[in-house]
Length: 134
Image (cartoon, rainbow, N blue to C red; front, side):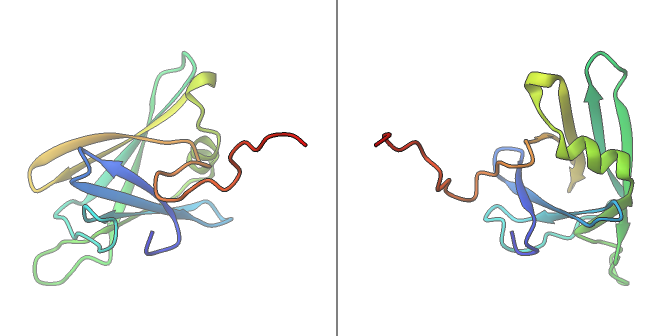
């Protein structure tokens, strides 16, 4: 993505989200356009991520809007500092019962999109395809 993060689809590829993180546990989500190239500022005070681990009740995390524009109070950037959330996102594995869902409303339409496993994103080719053994 444009910020060097992990890109995910929102809806039927109408939008994308990109997320980055640092060692302190700060997670930043950016709302992007259909091509995952440009930021799409939205009028939202927050977006949420719901994390479900095994049979436990889902935990909801709120990422607050940052860098709101002065005139229309829109932004494409949402942040939270939470090492538990970062740990959960890095361990995403539906086979192990660890799942996370991004919830965001864009222009009045609510979207709920699964956050994929940390190491996979649909935006790059995998170089380590199987090669025949020699």
